[in-house]
Length: 575
Image 1 (tube, rainbow, N blue to C red):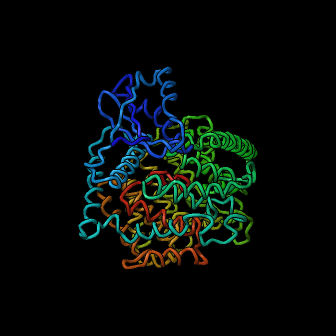
Image 2 (image 1 turned 90 degrees about the vertical axis):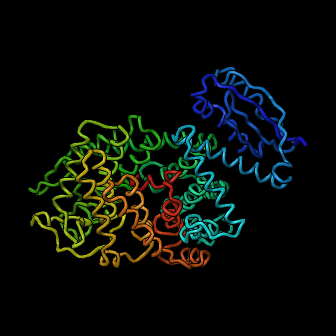
Image 3 (image 1 turned 30 degrees about the horizontal axis):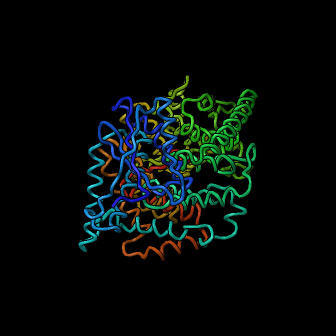
């Protein structure tokens, strides 16, 4: 029997080979916008030459939102024809009304997944997509037949990630302190936007509802976000923009208006920071960490621009600045690297750092600049002197490289006394974290090696991480599970590095991940207890950088054997 609300149109495109491109430009935004407005409950399509068969379920009482919009696409030439067709769901064949409804929900999710895949540049008709779909169906069949659980979808890490997401499902029910929506409201590291990132990634993978992400963004934006000199990539408008951009890449049209305004604000803020930085350089003064680092500085702004406007002048201006930052500077008769700062590692004056220091970390030091220069070069975005700047930073890291007994390591920073002695302090095992230490520096060097086509350095960087993560002394120094400087962050970096690793090291890097996951979430751990313990731990909490949301994100991609779909880790400058 024909459903009174299901409808079908057949849309024909000017060129079948470009049908996906034209559909992304016109048809996909139309369907997504109607769903977001509540005039469509579901939709899916079938790509069957010579047309796309689009089937959609209107909301009871709503007017058909598709016909007039298709007329507009026809007038502008995006499609060459469209025809309304009677669609009769094969309810009996699928096993009844309930089974047919389940199939429609599946078709809707599948079509959304195809659109997301095309939007992310995955291309058209891929046989591997069919294989993945068949695998998912087999897993479902396994569950129906009470066969053993699939080791990927039922891994302890993935169960733990889901438990964290469920516990943080809504701002009203989540066990978070009032600071989350007051003191920390504008912080990416500790606030609601970081929790939204977790839900965005899960929704982009088809593992959770988009409503959860939207609810956390609504809570975050109940009051205005600051911009200008008091904001930075992890605080205020830039932090909000980063998270909204991750969602907008998958929710076509829903966030574009606010994002355009945020883009303009961030470009203007970056321009003002660049002007101040060049005035400082012209005066021959030392920089502050917050001028150039990933968390607060221009490297972080560059990470955002690389994702949002890679071909624009603002990113090129940031890269030009990064090149200039690598030029030497003279202070008190010492020739220093251009990123030498007079402060301590906190960015504030510190008597334990007489004469300042050169910071090597990915979060607060030259590691972030190196990663930005390398990531940009790998995308074909280059400015004059960029490769020379990369080599200058690499030469500095080579100069101060230490031997841990399990491979190379790098000090968190070099002080003025160490510089004058031409020797770092004696090596002691340190945690090899993202923010400071071997993991972050090794990833930055791997990216640089890939940008320079330097396979020798690439292998050395990858072996450095293998050495650090098999060194019991360094692992013992890693005392928490957080994304910033804990075990989950190490697992995510190892997974990211394995993706583009040299064949001689890729297997070793991949082999590190399960043990790191087991350290965070041992087999047999109750997922609900794990999630609750994380959220209530005084040194963790619910947030992104050190807390439950970040740990869940770090566990998620390796556990699903997929790279992040939402690019949530772009703010870390590791991808």
